[in-house]
Length: 218
Ligand SMILES: [Zn+2]
Image (cartoon, rainbow, N blue to C red; front, side, top):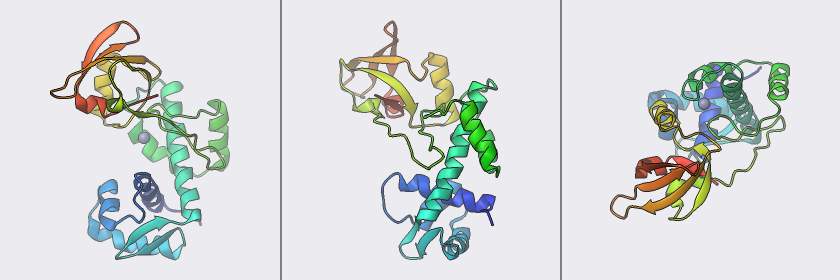
């Protein structure tokens, strides 16, 4: 039996939280990620543990088994491929694809997914710059770091967003700053860590510290 939509969402949530690097994931973190009541989490986690997709104890929390991780990566692969498809082929903007991909990520057809991957030319990153796991579950490595870790004089390329909220993505659209654009840090204001930047070698702008902490560059 394939995992249900709810089960897939749990596995994906556990995987995404585990990327932040803290071993076992407590119930509360899973509830927050899924935006649900913590009281309802325990029962589902027990069920996932019974199916051997996670290891779970109430005191320590949950971690994915190898089988659980494969399932989680499959969902993420679907999500990110669909986001890429929606932007590249259907003309969606990058701030409106997430909600649609949340639904499409649960379509069960291995064949469709592989064809979609091929149709898109095996993309390695989605429109937000997130790595797309390949059919074997391997994830392209990204050496990206936050713009806020750069120093004055650095010349970088914008490769992804660490904040995928609609308001932030719309802000970047308004500034006219897109993935693959270049950015040069001209000066960092000591007082509030805002950055004076030059975009694509010509357009001057000032990015707040919060914006700098939300942009990934290489
Ligand atoms: Zn998304």
